[in-house]
Length: 299
Image 1 (tube, rainbow, N blue to C red):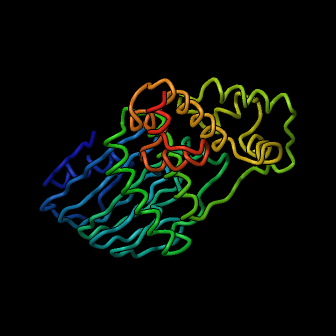
Image 2: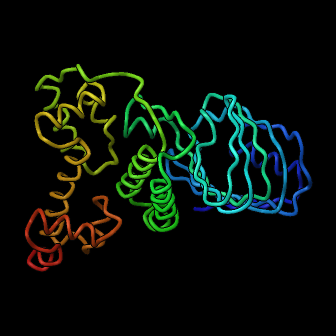
């Protein structure tokens, strides 16, 4: 559900922004003609849209989260860690390091924000930290923004009650963000070895818990190794990744549901993590040589 707040008072604007991001002090500000904020949350991810007619300068305490944005209109100046950035319409950006304060000057911006807790980043790539505030390329920024809009406006409102779809959408968003903004791995697990029984524990966990929104971190905990180690083990011994193995198991479960006529093709696809029946049909045909509807009719 989307939550919308609208204010026309400077003190109220400070309260809204402080509650959404971090405690801030206005160094300069005019009474806003209008400031509005719409938020939609999905687990450890939040999508915000801000707009209005106002101008202010603020000093903000550390966010404690990874905050990224796309400026649609207006102007935004950010200062953090001794660097100053001037942003205009069409610019994608990371606000600041989660543990660093920053200063912002806003001139009637209309901005889309994506807030990622470090916990959801760790589910996709353990011990990764974002380092840069600018996208690695304009092309990546465009694809990132398109992914954000698709998940926020099309996937989450429709599939909010399907945890596997929401989980897949979240992992896609994190992966796209990692591909768009500079980052580093702060721990090297390259030399870590995984014994066969640990890999067996991982496989057993996946096969028993495939109906839940499990992550690579969950699989690593079940195997009692690090995320990086279990990823290397799946690549080395199975020529795949833990998440690809999960998708394979879920597709097999969807196959069983189709054989048993346990719902429509669209319902079964969503149950096993597919927001788009067309994608489900393509993956299913590759695996089983027939369409999902053919299996359903013959069940």
